[in-house]
Length: 63
Image (cartoon, rainbow, N blue to C red):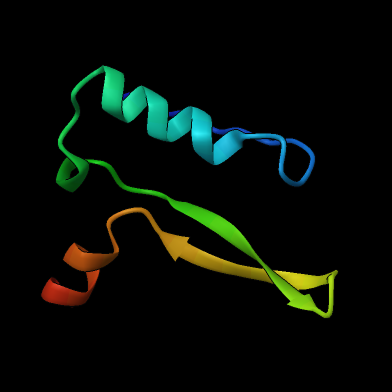
């Protein structure tokens, strides 16, 4: 099992990096687990974050 954990400023490209790795390594998204965050905005200001699983469709199907 390999683990990748990215941190950084908002909108720096963390999700883009992970999606690029998945695509370039031709990984099956059903085998990938984890989460990413999306900002919860009030107007244009971030007020919090939504946590989204990377394998949401599988999560919904099997839970």
